[in-house]
Structure formats: C-alpha cells, structure tokens
Amino acid sequence: MSRISTDQVKHVANLARLAITEEEAQMFTKQLDDIISFAEQLNELDTEGVEPTTHVLNMTNVLREDKPDAGLPVEEVLKNAPDHEDGQVRVPSIME
Image (tube, rainbow, N blue to C red; front, side, top):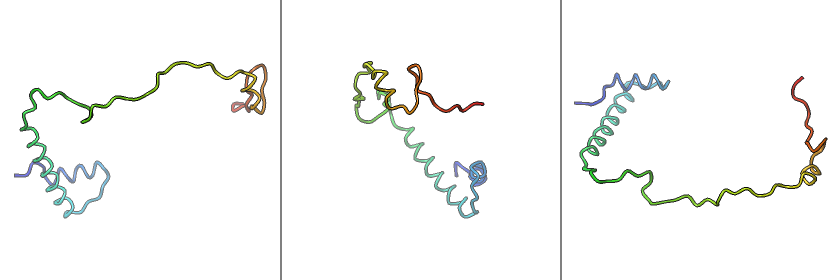
C-alpha cells in the first residue's frame, strides 16, 4: 500500500504552482513512496547514545579575534570626499 496518494501529489504540485501531467503524478507518487520507505528504515536504527551533530567532522571556526583598531584620521578621510563641511562628508539631499 502506498504511503502517499496521487491526489496528495497533485495537491502539493498545485500549492507549488506546478503543472504536472497524470503520468508525472504517478511517477512522483512512486518516487515519494520510495523516499518515505527509506526514511522509515532510518527510524529503525538504534541511535541510543549517539550524540547529535551539526556536521560530520569536528570543525571550529577559524576567525580572528574581533578587536577594535584606531580609525583613520578625519583629515585623511575628508581629503577623498568631493565635498565636506565641519568634519562631515556632504552628499546631495535626497529629501525635499
């Protein structure tokens, strides 16, 4: 007995806005039933004492320490600005 019906496949296809033919619905019903059968086999495994993992390898991020550094002097920053006033970069107004 199939664990998923052709009507369910058609309903999901409709929700996903997919147009499928009757032959495709039959094919997907068989494929999805095979996937469900495999998942049920996995449920039979004894996982007692197996620690949950997020990755199969023991990995850690290799990031540098996040520490603040001194910024550029205001004069050096403003020398590249096309227009500035009172230590601020002036930009064209976007609001009227």
